[in-house]
Image (cartoon, rainbow, N blue to C red; front, side):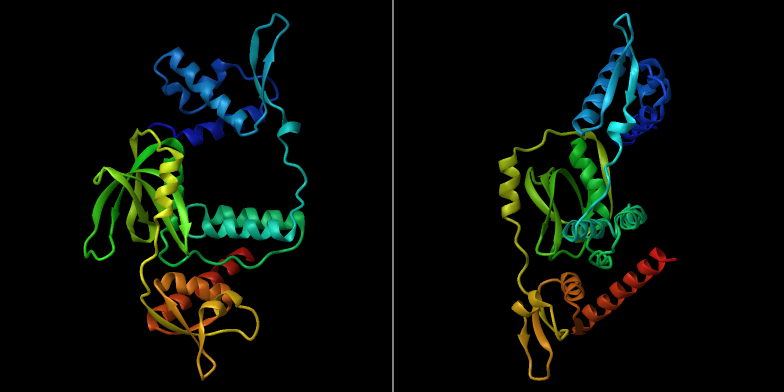
Length: 311
């Protein structure tokens, strides 16, 4: 089974970082999963040079160690140069980290993201606002596969339930970028079925996203920007009634209309987005019933996450 390039890069870093003496190319080829798959010495050399250059571009200090005869003896990572500096995040930076962790709350790195936040809190001191759950049914769990496909220029396959359709259809996409617009995640790229650029909302992807073997040539930056500019949310679906807290919730108050009984009416196009907006505002949804149930489920997810984090 072929080794994923990201896994190979990580293994290379671990190997060089843990070595007390320079590691030769021959030793790396026999140690790092994936290098042994190279059919020839030349193929291995090209693979290793690309990996080494990519890691250096990422700021990882790989040193080439030369002996007294001027021959390359091997490679090391300077542990002092690679060591993480003291953590000193301010409140705004911690808030950004919290938002980033929320992106992963339904994805493959849920436990890792939460554990990382707890470690940073312990080192830096202080805590930030509780982690909100990912938007119910948002499709955020597909982000890791899509980001890796974009990075490696690989096409993806998935089943998609288009708006107004009753059954799913298979789609093959050359993904260019992901975007977050008005509370919803999208992936944009070249649709093989349409032969043109298209945007797909992640919440309408049904089942897993499969990364394919063949590579593609990425689009020009201007083409991606034009496609992102065309992302438009659907028309208003209905009106929700919510109860807002006595203070705060400024963003929701700007778009809501007060009612005589002290509640507020909010126009919405997607109940999933409505739920997360309400949670962020500290609001309680009173109707419609499907949004009420979604909010209850989201709150239960928050409670479970905090119980696990403090267990």
